[in-house]
Length: 426
Image (tube, rainbow, N blue to C red):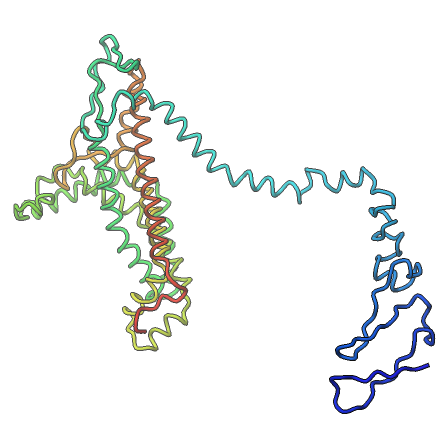
């Protein structure tokens, strides 16, 4: 018995090939039946029912997996609804907590929080130590420039329930100003020098010479800060004082230039400190900028040159715009080191307390240098108030560093451009 199905979307009236009924085929009775499609005239298989499939057939394996209903994937097999459960020991071994696939994500999550936890412990410990000093010093701690530890040999007095030596009075304005001044002068000098050095190393020098200069930059970054401080104290500071004194004395006495005029002294002061900090943060800026420049796609630079730009224009328009967010990040790293530098600053700054530097040649002090130079004397305070004040200074330094990092992050978001930082009109 045959049936003829005429297609509705076909070409002409030619019938489709005859299709045999299910009872005239050689397939078993449980083979899938066929139904007709009213729209296209095609024939689609009807979904088989599980009870109609004989065990062991190809269709049963396709539905239930190997072994049919009683196989590993079937409802009656291991792990199915009606079959025996997986042995408890095997499941325990498969899901044990110490397995690498289960343990490593937990370990990585814990490791990721270690810096945050360490920072929280540091801040909490400093706050607990500094709270009595904060209550006594008050807001005048940020508006006055005085550092008087009081009389250690007189009986202790108490203010707001906090014991301290009589006459103890502290103000950190000069330390805050000295820290910010020296760090930002160093950063203002290091950014153009570092970026220019990186541009020359990557763009102009031969490969062998470029590798040599890069090696010396890395060596300069690894020199301990005490060596910089000793060199500045013994050699660099006196050299500046001797050779720049005639220039400092000939600067016109006008309000704008008075900051650069005055006696140079022995070479210990704000200028020497800033230049030493410049040398210390210069390798960070230069090495980071060099690595960023090597990541700039050459077709982009060559395309700018092909459009008629000179080398300097392509550097300014394409290369520097491509790396500017990275340069800002490197500058923040250098600023963080300059803000927290201790030994080198303590050796070349003059370590003067109670006043800000009136000229660039004058002695000054920073928060980090004051902490390290005053810590020994603070331990002789029987009340512990001097140590608590140093803890308050540390919190101020932490706040300055945090503000600098937040400002740099906002600046990076603002200057982050498109994938092809080409100037207008190109």
